[in-house]
Length: 538
Image 1: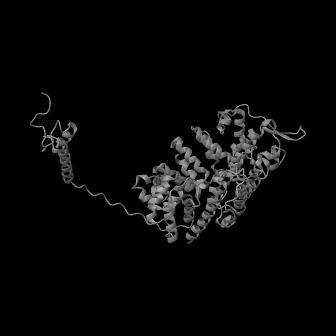
Image 2: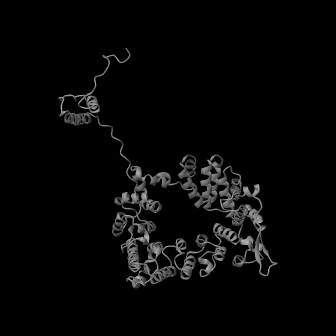
């Protein structure tokens, strides 16, 4: 017979017999040491409990694991005691429903945490060790908090993250997992990390070297460029935005022939951001051939003749031949040519006119939207404040509130090219002329805290909306922004807005109470922000 001889078979263990009795049932298999009958199930459980204790007691202790290295020292000064208590309160608060859409007058503490972290980091304080778990939990749930939270948490957070899988994001977000990047003079460490490091470490290394010495960063990249994967080449190439200059042009010209379409497109975009590059000159030749001033009309106007084909040379220079759904091919090609053309080329082409005069010219055959949108992209890419001002126009103009040749999204990007004071002044003028309903995107690009003219314009516009009986929840987003961005010095201007106003017949039901609560919460939040800043004083 096949099978194991009886002499060689091992008798079942007590645990195995108990498992067999449990699987078959005590009516079919009596547990060891028990009598059959109605008490057999209880006897089985008692025997299993006793055997479990016996099995555990018989385990041999495992070898002790080596003790982890102690957490690295954080040389930064400790938080002042009031600020440490404030941090505990901010971290203990649960996320609300978001900004000004809440009811009640209590501030949303979690929405103040990013500002608190920004001030603490600017003043160079170290995080209290007892606050790190809650801080890492908060950063885990909100990706927007992670950069500031990890900077404040310092090296101890990376040490902790190695012991808790929930905090592994800290290791991914911090190249080198806490190890400092080598300096430009440490050539051996630089070469070793570039050759052997993880991808995130190599990206961080390239960005750091580019910020200090753009030529050295480019030389590091070219040393391994042919052997890099396409997706890695794309990320490395994007790092050249830091310190981008004319000396990068030969390398970027070579990248125009890369086998990856995305790499070619990024190289072309970077070259077009260099107005003196050969690619920008080639694009200018193509673009100006499509745009001219028709002087035969009673009023001079711009006429456009879009390209009829996208040839191989255009495609090599970054023009994407296939238009997205809903776009005509010729307008798609024209927009790419114009946005890659140096803006300085248009004055000579269009009769020596200044940017504001060019933008004011009528454009024949409904080409204005396409042409102005491409000029907007060019102004943002080339950081040309003069063209940005011309395309923005005066904030009080009727077309500034839309619809117009330049959309609100494009205006927000154009504002980013202006100095912070001028940006705030333009948005304040926009709000005064057009109200708050279209201003949310524009407010998002203004420096925090808002400059006094902008803060006053926002408060005045909110007051006007309240007096008009407007539907209050329509302004909840702006109210939430005001809580985070209004200068705390403006708190006193809200004293006259705290009472519940008389509601007109056409006002939204309950609007007066909502507005009163919202203004009370705004004032309370501003005062709390002022106290927080004082607590973080060195």
